Amino acid sequence: MSAVVMDGKALAAKVKEQVRQKAEKLSRRPGLAVIIVGDNPASRVYVNGKKKDCEECGFYSEEHALPGTAAQEELLELIAALNERGDIDGIMVQLPLPGQFNEQEVLRAIRTDKDVDCFHPYNVGKLMIGEKGFLPCTPAGVMRMLEEYGVDVAGKHCVVVGRSNIVGKPQSILMLQKHATVTICHSRTPDLAEQCRRADILVAAVGKVGLITADMVKEGAVVVDVAMNRNEQGKLCGDVCYEEVTKKASYITPVPGGVGPMTRAMLMENTLYAAVNHGK
Ligand code: NAP
Image 1 (cartoon, protein in one colour):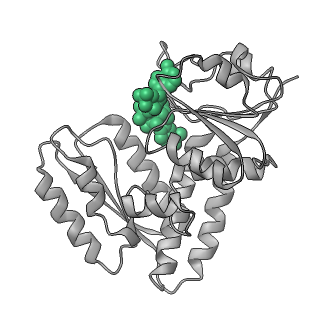
Image 2 (spheres, helix red, strand yellow):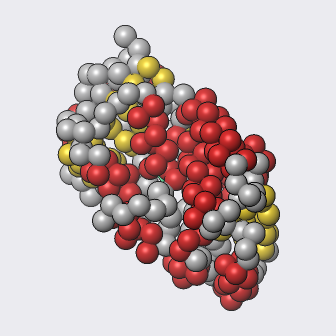
Image 3 (tube, protein in one colour):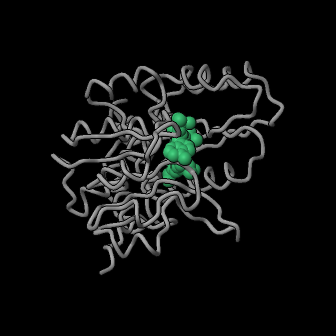
């Protein structure tokens, strides 16, 4: 038996089309400002992708590219100016920033109603207590995909491998809010394989090629691979040994074409949400 492949690319296209239709009804186009600092090639690919998504959704977008040598102050001034702009609903800073930046200070400078990545501590706090607001893009994309494929997380045992602020922690919170029993694993978890085998739904968000092997997966489990790694051949891949795990899982996400496109689609949803809240 082979798992059902959860097609993030197709679902993301559907979500973006829904966003486009809703945006069309607003009196003014939602606007997203994307800030990129330095010349990290991966960041450039992500930023170009976001511009394309904005076009598809009928949004206004603008890019601000700062040199890798830019100072913290320069970036903070740019964010302060964007915070005041009526045509900009969302501001996102492509991470990682070069070493001289204080990332946390930068993220806190974004006005909370324009924080479409949901990285500001205020919005993270709202998420924690279950108040309506922005949802972090990657974990929200995972939840949407599970929902779309009819995977109910309520009462399930979800094991999230990874505890970063961007993926692992918020993923766990969203699953908990949907009434899952959640185990969070990380680099100090003594027997990762044993923990993973207990999962009805396993989310891998580490960044290590080949970490999740078939013997770590329960028969019929749902497997979500968040990671984006390059293997020895330079090919994009996740944490999960796809070929062997797909034979055991009931549902699985591919890399590429799984969580990645959903993350991008959720950024568009958040920008629309911001625009609606700004009364457009
Ligand atoms: P991160 O900040 O580096 O966090 C990695 C997490 O994995 C940490 O919590 C770490 O534990 C844990 N870990 C490391 N080695 C481990 C091991 N051997 N066993 C168990 N846990 C281990 O990474 P991230 O930002 O969360 O990203 C994770 C992956 O997702 C990366 O591949 C990234 O590229 C990808 N990603 C994809 C998307 C998307 O849209 N698809 C979005 C964001 C990130 P400690 O906390 O103990 O160090």
